[in-house]
Image (cartoon, rainbow, N blue to C red; front, side, top):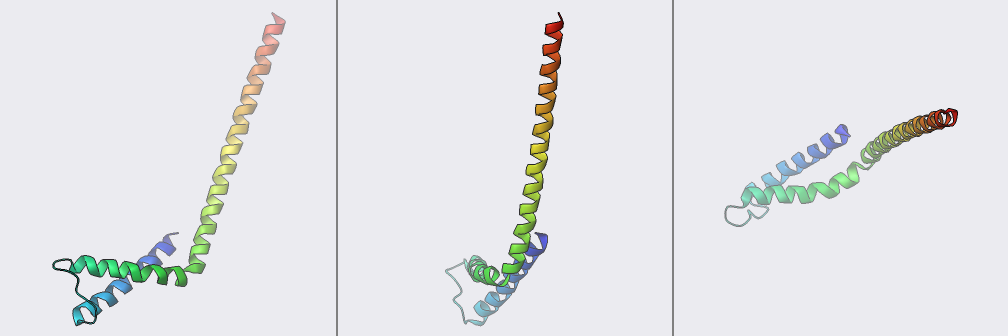
Length: 103
């Protein structure tokens, strides 16, 4: 997951550099008034999103498979804990039932 995030950040930074170059060379609009920095960042975000979607498809699939494995492991651990608790409650109920019958 960290690898995917870093790759995505790299694509954004690359787009930010390209957009900044285009804006300061006059090939792209400079924004409105004092909004130049915000304009450059927003344009870089808009450009980097589809590029990341296409270029990082395999890495995103790999990251999501890792997440699914972790979630499945957590579910299995929760289920194991539940069954242990159920066994303990059943054992306590049996022991209490035997004690009350003996009295």
